[in-house]
Image (cartoon, rainbow, N blue to C red; front, side, top):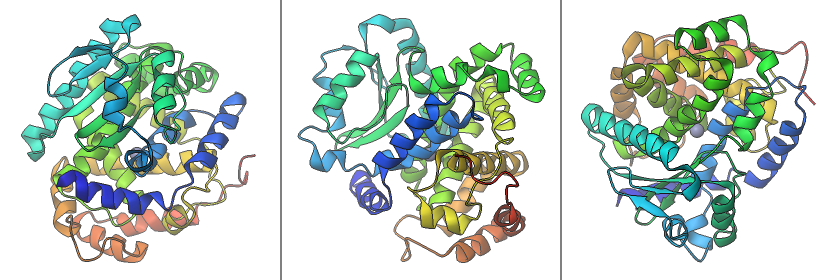
Amino acid sequence: MPIAVLMIILDDISRMFEVKKIQTNFREECMDTNKIVARALIAMALLSPRSFGQESAKKADVSPMEAVLRLHLSNRESLASLYYSACCRDRAVELQESVRDFIAFYKDKLGVASPITVAVLDENDWDRIKQQMPDYRFPYGMPNFQVSPSGYVLFIPADDKGVVTQHLLGDRQHATEASLKLFASAHLTYDEAVRRAILQLAYHEAGHTRVYEYGIQPPNLWLNEILANYLAFAYGKARDPQTAAVTEGFVKMGIEIPAGAYTSLDDFDAHFGNIEPANYDWYQMQFATRALEIYNEQGLGFVAKVRSVFPKGASKSKMSVAETLSQLEAISPGFQAWAKTLGESRSEFGPLH
Ligand SMILES: [Zn+2]
């Protein structure tokens, strides 16, 4: 039943997305290493809800879970059952353990225990997934989760050759002093932090699944993103401080990105799917920053409050930004002022092209 409800939500969301265009833009952006980056991290986060609405389970001949099973990979069972490419068992097991602990954490904190299957794939196996599922559009290296009738499947790259890691590795010249300091506090060099960023993205993806399973129905896309960031960060702070430091470091780095054509929450929802990657990344940085701020004030108590005002099955699945903000203001004062500041942000640089 939860999956069925989810699919309805996702299907609804999917109509708003133009995944292909965004990913094409994203790839083009990745070609230009001179542009301010770290955006890969954000684009990642951004793309995830789209994966929810990919309709892959509907259109493709096989479900995401079946596609993984048909690869005939080695398997390791747990709350986060793992299927992994032959190249990379150690890394795959490490990722599996992290996701398993993420699930266990939220079972304890939120009472959500639904399993997530983890597919840690090299580029060749990733391509074999694409061949089976024509609607699966994620380039290699971009973590994402899919919904199968039998449960969630989280796809994670098995090595450092993927688009996100390569993009960030090529962007080390843009690392800021504050970011490097945070990485160093976690005993990580820039390159090590980049490699760990994949875990942050995996937590973000897994976070989306927990938001729905917990019973929250975000009435706006931007709130959905804030919540995924929130759960990823909350877990990191409690159980994986190294990854939490990586998150904060990249947020500090990414917040330097100039605002683009769109800056308001209304714009975000209205133009979702047509926002330039750099502009989209700007939004994600604002969302991550907001999530960090609230988490430091309220911890996970905020998530419970969000469910009380936006429960799954509520009569209104969508709300105006003003209406949502007014509800959020009551449980986390400062939301309206934050949104106002956001809307008034105008880049002197203009949109990046
Ligand atoms: Zn997301």
